Image: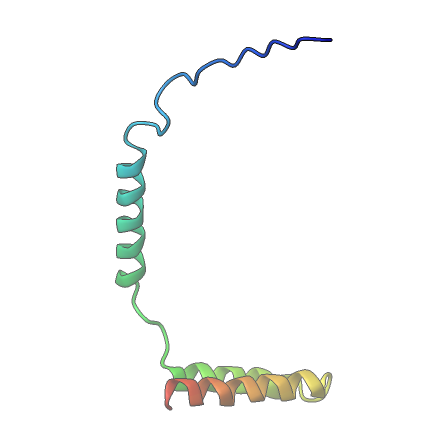
Length: 82
């Protein structure tokens, strides 16, 4: 019969580094402030018009892609109630 002896070392130090929870909360708060403070660039109608102009430019070279872009512009307008 063979006997196996396993030695397991106890964990050293705190299980969660001190201050990590507070650092994470501060990071999330700053990230949310940065997102909400960002000004909106264009209106949904202007964004849809820009996509339609891009679709028009691809009409000759890739009509399928142009149709997809036009459909995306329509969907964008419906989504944002324009």
